[in-house]
Length: 393
Image 1 (tube, rainbow, N blue to C red):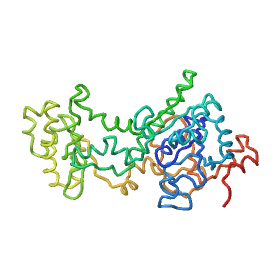
Image 2 (image 1 turned 120 degrees about the vertical axis):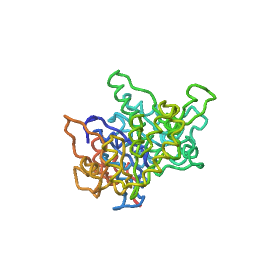
Image 3 (image 1 turned 135 degrees about the horizontal axis):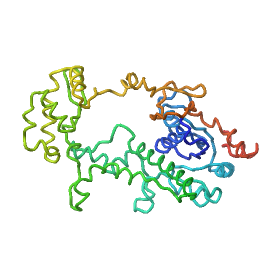
Image 4 (image 1 turned 30 degrees about the vertical axis):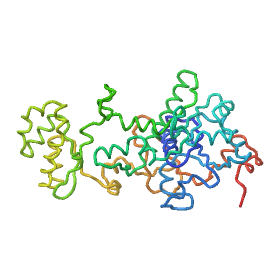
């Protein structure tokens, strides 16, 4: 934990992946994150594999550095307890449908009336000023709607979802930096931003189009698509005993590689030396690599590319990363927790900061582990704490 946000308190009304991913980043940066969970807990707690009741791998990997408080927000006691917590916080973050939180009584105006300095940030599926506002949104749906899955269709002929929860995690990054920016603005300007909305659809559309807006950037009728990135030949290359990722990017890179594979004459072609014409014929260059690389082993090619200073790496499977020497050098998977935990591998915040002492991380919390201590510190009485808890079954 890096103590950049020491003293900042976040009320975390998020669940699943998007919101928890964002608030874990804030917790990793030193904020005190109070995760409010319903009586049954965040739904991710039960997704296999599960090490113990309420502690799944996916939950553990997006809920480090948080404290879990169980409140039944459908009850008056639960709502009253949250109203006591709000004045103690710097920000309230949620990824519920805004209408659902409004019905519970925690509208932007209601929360601001309890704490005029609080940052109120919401991740939603679609911006409230557009016609899709209020529609349900999940990662797969947003990947499809935003053009992200369609990029695969442009290349391969059919749309495909990325095999990672891309829309949720990209949206989570946007939500985290929105809160950070708002906190900085409040401290620098002495003003509190209004309602902050982070819409998945719009931001993933922008994420998908950043390089692909292409001709349409300057011409309303222009084509979209970045040729090099959409090339079907842009892929890892098969070698004699494995696969290698290789990216000759500059003309000098390409000349070195072409010389190595015995095709240096290509560098004398008129189209080769201009980025636009070279990009238009990139498939031809990629095909030369695809034809040449099976003639040597991974180790042989990687040694050549390192000598030539060409960007390259072997293709690693996800399981291989656990034993990658560089990742172990930098302790990416080290579970540096302040107390015992079921978690033996964690995915630390991949950031290095000098001249600041980092602190041990809080392990992902068991459901409701901090309910009593957090509510008591907020001034709740024994009776109020009892009223905030769900009824026993």
